View 1 (spheres, rainbow, N blue to C red):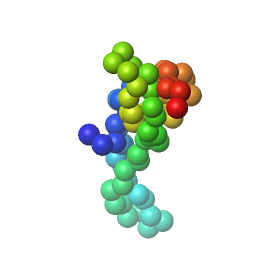
View 2: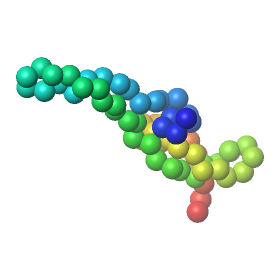
View 3: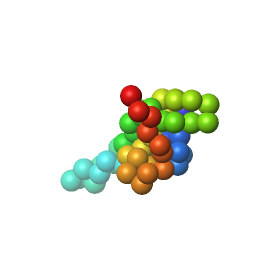
Length: 64
């Protein structure tokens, strides 16, 4: 899946846009994903991680 955090598994949420006239149409909220080079057991790797995981320190960034 393209829009998924590889650490916490966060994926897009679905819901409705609601107009002033109470008309509803589907919409999606995407997680704030960033491509980050991280240190893994098998070397450096580029993965998609949400900003909440980056701020929480759940990953170890690779030195560029």
